Length: 288
Image 1 (tube, helix red, strand yellow):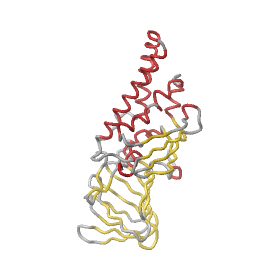
Image 2 (cartoon, helix red, strand yellow; image 1 turned 45 degrees about the horizontal axis):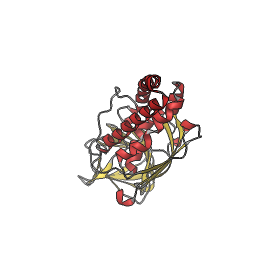
Image 3 (cartoon, one colour; image 1 turned 180 degrees about the vertical axis):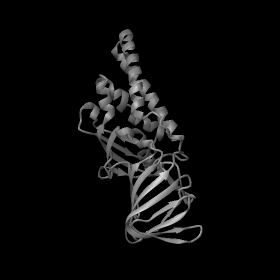
Image 4 (cartoon, one colour; image 1 turned 45 degrees about the vertical axis):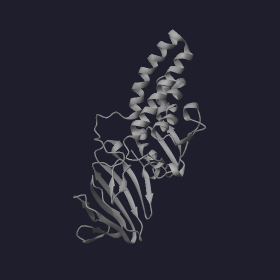
C-alpha cells in the first residue's frame, strides 16, 4: 500500500521547471513496470525521449498537446485521452490552458536515476534486469546479521568483546566502502548528491526506510529518516546493541567509496533511541 500524499517529500518525488512527478512504483519495487503521476504546468515545453523504455500516458485532467518530433504531428490531450510512445518516440509535451495531470506507465520500469543526455533520457546508473529473485537490501542485512552474530560470538569467546567489536566494525566499514566504489563504477561520471538521492531507492525498497527529504541538489542533500526497519530488524533479532555497527556504521563509509568529496554529518539515530535520524550531506560545487 502506498499513499501518494506521503511521497512528496521523499526520494520518489521529482520536479523541474514547469513539471513535477511522483513515482508510485519504480524498478526497485520489482513489478516489471513503473507508475508515475505527472503534473505539467502551462508555458513550458518538455522535450522528452526515453530511449530504453516504452511509455504510455493517460490524461486525468487539464488540456495540452503532444508533438511527434519525427513527423511534426500535433495531437491534443484532454481528460480520457491516452498516448503511447511505442517506438521510444522523441516528443514535446506541453500544457496549454490548464495543468495537465497524467498517469504514466514505463516498461521496463525506470529506476529513478535517468538523466537527460544528448537529447534523450539514459539510465544512470545503467539499468540491470530486475527479477523476483533479487534480494532486497533489508533482507540481505538480515542474512548478514545472522552470520556476523556468529562471528562476533566466536571472537568474543576466544579474544574478548573488545576484539570482537572492533573486528565487526572494521569488516562492516570495508564492506560499505567497497559497496560505494561498486555503485560509483556504475555511473559514467563522478556521482553528485542528486545521484546519491536517487540510489537511496535501493535502501528504501520494501518500505525499509521512510524519508522526509528536506533538500536535494547536486551539492546539498538533507533528509530525516522517520522510520527505520533496519533498526527494528536488529532489535527483533536481539542485536540492538550491535545495530549501530551493523547498519549506521555503513553510511559515512559508503560515501567515501561513492564520492570521497562528499561530507556526511549525522547527530542522532533511531538505532540509538532518537525519534529520527538526521542525514546531512554536502559536496563542494567544484566537485559536483
